[in-house]
Image (cartoon, rainbow, N blue to C red):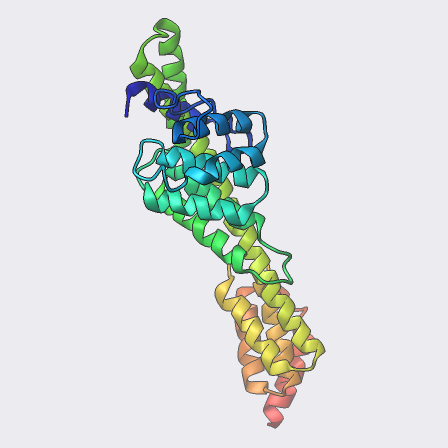
Length: 298
C-alpha cells in the first residue's frame, strides 16, 4: 500500500463513525472520472457520502461489490457501503457488509472499526425488553469480540503520545513519520473511547435481557404457573448476576416456592438470599416465620 494511502487511511479512522467524512482514503488509487469502473464508482460514492446522500452512495457501490474482490479497493468499497447502509438506518444490510469486510479482508485497517460498527448495528436492532432479543444477544457477542480482539493501552500513556507527536509536528510539520504516528495515537485514543462505549453497551444490553427474563417470570405468576416462574427466576439468578435483577429474582423465587408449599426449598432459598443480602433480615422476618412454621409441621 503506498505511503500516502496509508496516512490517509489512518486519518480516516480517526473520525468517529457518527460523523465519518470520507474524502478519498484511497486517493492514490481512485480516479475522479464518472466511469462505471470500481475506481470511478468509489469516487462518486465518496462524493455522495460526504454530502450525506447515503442512499445514492450505496447505489454507486452495490454493483461493484464482487468486481472489487481481491483489488486494492475491496475493503474501501465494503466499508463505505457498510457505512452508507448504517447511516441510512439499513442495519441488516450494514451487518452483512461489515461481516464481509471482516471475513474477506481481516487485515484491513478498517477491520477494527468494522467490528465495532457490526456490534453497534445489532445494538440498533435490539428491541424493547418484552420482545425477541436475537440482536441483543448478537450485539453483546460482537462487542465482546471487539474488546477481546482490540485490547487498549493505558489511556494516560496514549494521551501522552498524542501530545508528544502534536508538539513534534509543530517543529517539523512535513515529517511523514510524525504524521503517521500522530494519526495512529489519535486513533488509539478514540478507540479507547469505543472500548468504554462497548463495555457500557454490554452492561446495558445484559440489563435488558435480565429484565426480559424477569418479566416472563412475573407473567407466569399472573397465570399461576409458579413452577415455570421459578425456572425463569433461577435463570435471572444464574445468567445475570451482574445486573440489578438478581435480588428481585431471589425474592420471586422464595415467593413461588412458598406458593407451591415447597417449604424445605423455600427455607434454603431464604437462607441463601439473606447471606447475599443480610440487610434484608427484618424485611423477610414474616416470610421466615411462615416458612419455619410450615416446615416444622411438614
